[in-house]
Image 1 (spheres, rainbow, N blue to C red):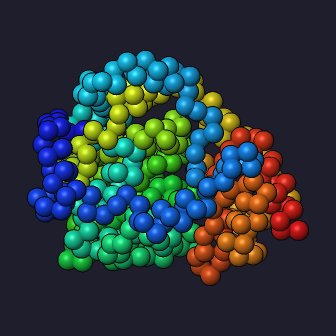
Image 2: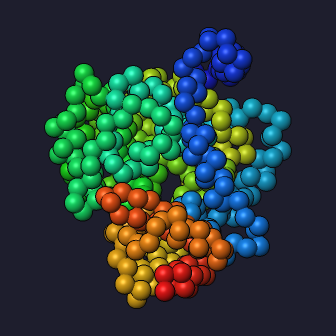
Length: 379
């Protein structure tokens, strides 16, 4: 959230854009998610609730929100008649303290998706360099000029190839999802830091750290230190995963003020976060006990999944996230449909001439349900 919040000006500009007057062409130039992808995702998830045995398709946290966050939500309802200036300021302060940055280095959003879309809109005047495959490489954020660089043989970002290729005359932004979605793999921190040092003076870098909390050492693996150094890097974070806020919509960008000013016109300037979500977000940020519980449970459930896949002869990629990706021996859509009939919901991909299945980490019972149904479907 920028220090110069001006709700009336934001409302004026967004209203003009909505009626097509052209006064604010920068606002929401591309949707947060493309229409085709949105329709596809909705169709794949609509099912009678009673039929769902394991919802493992959206990388959600099945254990939250925490009790403290829920209590803050309840108490926040009483302030629902007021705009969330105080709550947004408090949340930004809490984030600044935790991440060791100044408040003017933080921009709040309704989940990191709003801020990711803002970054794409702001920088898509040239090509955006990214990996094939990553979260936004297949139209998740709509159509924009892309320069896709193949993953390495072990399915990591090819930072060497990207560094060699980066050209400010061609590229306006480099996008790195770390840990990557859908592969779940995390880059060596020292190599990513060197990549930032070498490339960011030429082309700004946006690092999507939606899953960084699941890394072995999140503080060491995060690139927020490069923000403190004043590099041309934007870090995106979300409360949707570790804090279980997927439906409450809280995220933020970390960057030096000059970069935040570039993407801010494409956002709601923090007002997309409700007074209740902001209050709950601050409570969640302080609830380290719940965070540790989530990490323990995620590790235990992941092991159930890994053991089950191993027994069935499937080898997943190493994962530093709350999901696992593994190659399958049938068409992805066929597997997804057959599992859905069992009440088990997953995602599928196709890249490197190979179909893949991505399974979110759920409760122990959900993982057991997946292993049971998967064994039945592939037998």
